[in-house]
Length: 290
Image (cartoon, rainbow, N blue to C red; front, side):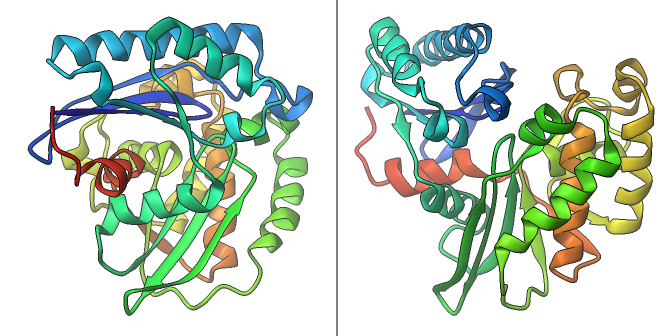
């Protein structure tokens, strides 16, 4: 068995694999990247919450019978950028004796692609808390790959609920994607796209059977983002937005809408097969299970 722990900018997620199949998934929202865009550092409170979340998942994995050597945590944009990232990495190692693999921005994009399509072709957008990876594979070759250092947590830190300023900023920043090859079908992974698909499916709780493979059209997203910017947290929870995400979902959805527009697309397909599966397939599937 293998336990993969994804330490993201908004949440820490766990997937336990046995014989190539996920037998357990869990998520704890610790918002590791909260405030990073303003200070350049991981805030003490967010660091503690995230270390605690990793501890919870290490214990959970061992209760399932996963050996310590087969617990594989990896981290993404926040840990890549934070000035005090070494402090966080050391805290986790000192506490649990496990190293965190800090994946590069290019590798993060590949994880989303492999998680979504395995060895197949396709186009994937992964909007996270601090970065948004776009990758396209055609004919067995990666034709395009770029990690935009912008996500739902970063946008919320910078602009709060100021939609006009946020929209202006996003429209300028997404030009960094440059010339993108034509995309016919885009699959999206990550908390923002999954949450939007869940709300539109009227699923109050996480249910991958209702969201995986769901087509979401941009006109519905436009209606959603209007509500996300005007409703309070309690009202957004009643729509199906999980409590820790209510504060950042507006920014994430606005970013998603703008990226779709930049790519000339009016819809996407939500996928629940993402970085966790991608990391397992890329780095663990070929290893002998413990």
